[in-house]
Length: 313
Image 1: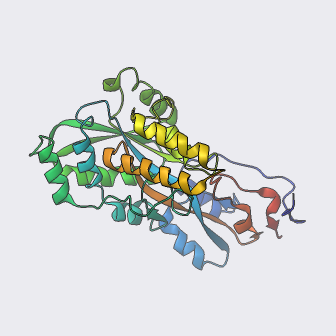
Image 2 (image 1 turned 180 degrees about the vertical axis):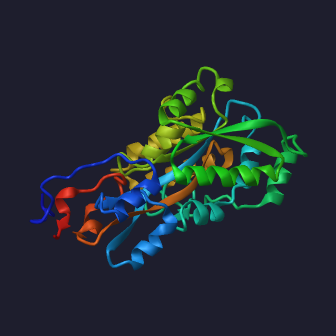
Image 3 (image 1 turned 30 degrees about the vertical axis):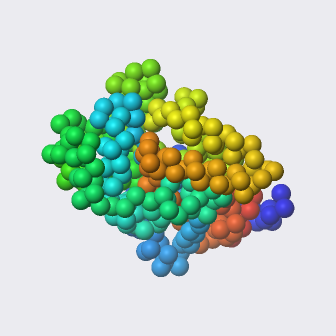
């Protein structure tokens, strides 16, 4: 490997610790050398302590909120637009990630080809109320919306709680339901066959398997992508635009980019899903771990290239 370090570890043990506070405790106790997942509000203190190093890197991982577009009242685009304008994006970044994220503009993350800066929804409760009234809900929605996220994920939990609080101001009641990923996935898979049996709101992460907008736009929103299109969205114009764009990436990238922009304009109008934030990735390690910044790939946010690490002592 060209970036391999002569002081790379001979053995690299990966421990699956889902709880952020537990990872923090184990790092401070010397039981682990690198923590992927600590409470974000602790990162600043770690950075001031000479016994630790903190590495922050841009990431193509983002957090997405998907709407069940087949199930009332979210089958009405005006309701989805209202909710999109009632999400306190800046507060979510500050509270859920302690500022270690960027308010999303669309579902293509910042810094990636195909990202545009004009697809943010303004947080505006007055506009949200107007849109709800246009949709036929001037005093709120007399139905509880079920929001599911992966249990144990502190970022998703905090994000869900802020959405819950903000939508309550519109007369929209949200039941937050933390589930194991297997339970969350199984519930969402019911939506194509029976939308009423599935959740209303679905929060999850996405990151690219290829560095192309197609991995976001096709998987989550193309009508033939039944596995990950968990908003159950169908729009043939959108489908055609992204497939044509993908076919042109290598031969006419400017034209492809324009088609991807038009496709995202459709998503912005129809609101089958909302990008919440683009992650600024971080790792905290004991100070004896060198080259950690070189061992992180923004396209593969959960991986560490162990052969690059320079371990001292």
